[in-house]
Length: 126
Image (cartoon, rainbow, N blue to C red; front, top):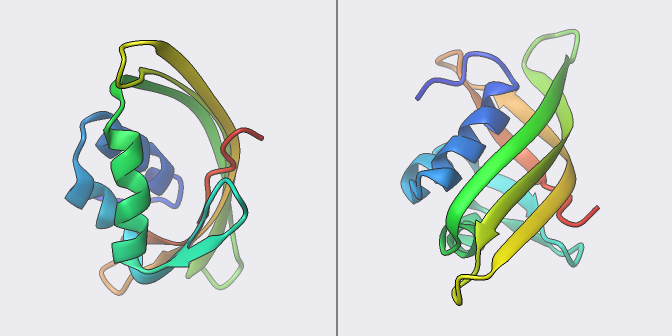
């Protein structure tokens, strides 16, 4: 699971959540990454982010559609990504739900050339 371009972080987070691959999803975040909750509260670190992603992964039949653009900074180690997404799933009672968002993230190039989220604002419900 390589993130060779900034926008790969978004593509792979959708893939790992859909596949219920919690540890694969967490690997997309820097150890001290920030994650913005729907309430606007910010949680920091992989352990706190793990707790948030567990809720998404509890949903059944999760399917994403998205559009993402990447805007690299001139020096090449940071990029802004933004986009829109929607997902359909079934809740614990089997009822269909739809979730939408307008996301914005900051991703950082790692020493091995891959990218990781350092700020993730999924923009749920926006």
